[in-house]
Structures are given as C-alpha cells and as structure tokens.
Length: 446
Image 1: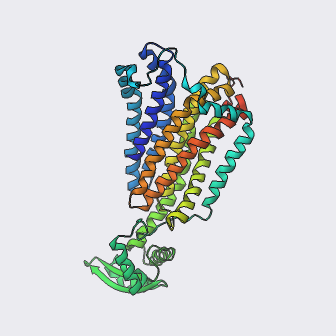
Image 2: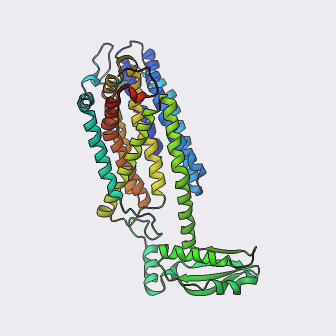
Image 3: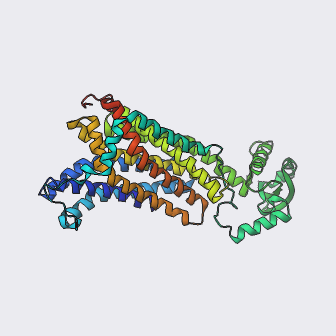
C-alpha cells in the first residue's frame, strides 16, 4: 500500500505539473493535455515499468511471502500507471482550468519555473560541474562508509521494537534452562532407524536428546541445543546435524526442523534470492533506461548514481539503527526489499529529469536543456520525493523492526536521490560531458 500510494502520487504530480505548464501555452486545454501526456507519458511509463518489472522479479524468490509481495505490488504499480495516464488526464480536462484555483494558469502567463530556486541551482552547478560532482560523490561515499561492519539477521526474539510477553517468557526459560530449551530442534526419522539416528545426533552443541511422538512409521527426536536460539552457533549445529544424518542409508527419511532450522533455511534462501535478484533488477532497470533514452552513457551514469545512493542510505541508516534506536542487526528481508524499492523508485526522479532534459536538448543543446529541465521539474520532483520519503518513514511507527528499517533506508535513499543525485550529481555529469552524455547518439549539441 505504501509503495503503490507513493508511486501513484509521483506520476500524478509529474503529469499535473506538465499540464499546468502547457496551459500557459495553449488555450485549448485538450491540446495542452495532449502535449503534457506526450512529454510526461514516456517518463511515467518508464518509471512505472522499472518498478513493476523489479517487483515482478520477486516471483523468482524462494520465499513465498516475497513472491506474493512482488505480484501484488507489480499489479498495483501497473494500475497506478493506467490511472495516471488515462483516468487523471480525463478528469483534469473535464474539470477545466479552475481546478488549479486560486492560481489558475492563463495563456501567455509567466512560467514560474524559469526563475525558480532549481533554475538558479542549475546555473550554479553548470559553472563548476566537475567540482560539484566530486563533492556530491564524496558525500555519498562518506555516508556509505557508515555501513562498514553492518550485521544481518535478527532472531525471533529481536524482531519487535518493544518485547511482547512471549519473548520475555522465552528469555526467562533460557536463563533457567539450557539456552535452546524454549525452542527445541526436532529430528523426524523413519522409526526403524530412530536408534541409529539418536547416536548420530549426539554431537557437540546438543545438550539433551529425548523421544518425541511416533506414529509407527516416523518418530521424533527432540534436541535441546546449548546455543542461543537462532544464533550463529545454533545454525551451525543444525548444519552439522543435517550433515551427520546423511550417514544413514540412502533413501532413509531424516529431516531436521524447528525454529533454528527454519531460520537457517530462510537465511540460505535469502542469500540465494539476493544473489539472483540483485543482478536481475539492475539489468532490467538498465535495459528500460536504454530503451527510453536510446543511449548507453546516460543509463550507465544513472545506474551508478542510484546504486551509490542505496549504499549511502544503507550506511546512514545503519548509524541511526546503532546509535539512535539500538537495533542489533538488520532483518534478513531488509536488504533485498530496500535495494529493490530504492533502485526502482530512486531512478524515477532521474528519469523525470533526464527525459525532460533530452526533450529540451533537441532544440537548445544538452547543457541548456539540462538547466531548463532542472528548473522545470525541480519543484515537482522535490515535492514527490519528500512525500514518498514521508510515506515510507511512517513504517517506523509499526511494531516490527524490519518495517522500521525498510522505511528508514528507503526514506533516506529517496531524499538522497531527490536532493543530491537528481539535483546535483546527474546535472553535473551532463554539464561535464555535454553531448557525450547521450552517447552513442549524435543528434544532440553541447
């Protein structure tokens, strides 16, 4: 809900701002809307496509909850695009100019963007673009360094911002009995081999072994581990148990379950998902940018910038988690979700800027086009970014640490993309490279 609401608002703000701008040039509001859609439509389609495709890639994840999240969110983004390109334009045209009351745009009126703070900022950046780009990159690098030594993985007793009674009770049991007594590890084995399995599972790290239920075909062995539940030591014991049980004859069913085993499986699945999805997300977004801009240089610059903002947001957030909130680690799901949201959503603002710059560059050149684009889109993109950051930050009021962490990382990352990457670094790169910004295309002037 947070993702779709924020993205849909972004698309609406971009279209409304462009429509308002065109109303200064055309008396016929239908013609103004046609020009607005022609200008803002490709950016909205590309932005929505990057988010929808990135989310749809979650269908390749091993964790079912992530598959569901990806499918539902991708459908929501597609619906948001349809609303932004069909429903909203129709409503704006039907209601007429008065919908902008009390600041109704009139034909021939002065474009407020021409002397906006963003236009002035663009002129300032264009004077010393190399120095400005270096400062921007240094800021991102400094923030990213805060993520050195980051820890990943929360136990079931650490996932809540405030401990519920169940967690407090588990801690009391752990103080009075072996650490794993509250969360025993269960071994299910064919009943004919239960005695052999009992001897095999008596390994270092296992404090107690007792018989569990049996239905004649399969029997349980209940193991109490010495290690804290879901700790690195406990997960290693589960790995050792599975390796040891492989010594049973081929074809014998012998499974290790329980909370520690589930955590180990989720950890391994998450590592696999990250190794698969992160490259696919980057490749899909990169290909969409190439199709949109029909160049290679600009997409490369945009991808480097958005990935840099992700690591900067992660580093800054880790410092906050450690020294403000006291979170012991990141939840397992945080990295993959934060990366997906930030790369897909963060590149949106650069898309809004660069597509407008490319449109203007056809007539006035790359550098002048970038300055005009920054002035024209600065206000609406900044408003959209602040709104989206605020929406994600709301997740921090929920009781789960994972949601608070995702909200914080995405919120900080969106602000960095909005106020630093899109405002300073990307324009500076365009000012430095000139027409090479669109390489290999040669139909643009400096």
